[in-house]
Length: 302
Ligand code: ATP
Image (cartoon, rainbow, N blue to C red):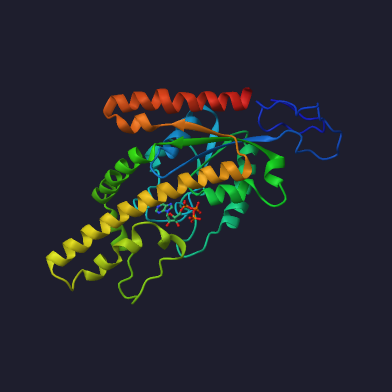
């Protein structure tokens, strides 16, 4: 642990002094050293959550969710939130905390995430921001007054899977979500009394809700064949929209890299998805977990 000249404890002991030996005798403390933040990016379904938890079990870290839909309470299956068991005791922030009816904008995210990062670094932990909402990450990192950049050094990790491979995996994941109870979960949150639902606000923007609307309305007033057809169409639509989301997210990562010159380390996880069973686990370890850990090690101690 290090103590700065005016007596405060340096939050992250792995940090080095700023280039040029910039130690000032100010009467107040930070920011003398920039704090460090890891940002895990990637399209839906690529393993961002798994990687961030693995990193957080390797380094003393806490995770900040940056998925604009997972911030809301409820709809655990639809929104693919990590379960308590999957979290492995790693503290997760901004996950399932916002009222489903409320708007939670990129600016709200910036505000809450900034406070959360401060509290994590005060606990001398490394914040790992993980999630697919690139607009939220951009709002946080590239704020108008450059405050974030003046406080934090960022290590961007991008878990990437070649889209043709990811696009054949995502429909299977939707099938698993359906088996896990996605339809029932949406039905329990479906307001049959409303003549028309608004799928443009709050958690209702989640992929899966708008798509199931016609099917759920047909329950009780359509025959079995019609209902089966509507359900099949809805599930196909969920699959198509999930694939579309993944493509948009990848495009956005490329755009962010160009627009802001972010030094994003691409971790190619494609082979993990090409393999199955133990081979996939081995590929994950060799191609994703280890390279990411050494990237973060270099970032922290480098
Ligand atoms: P955009 O500006 O296009 O909204 P973004 O970077 O702010 O992009 P994304 O994470 O790409 O946010 O989400 C875009 C849309 O994808 C959301 O509005 C929602 O419809 C859907 N979506 C995102 N995350 C989830 C999720 N976890 N579960 C269900 N749907 C999601």
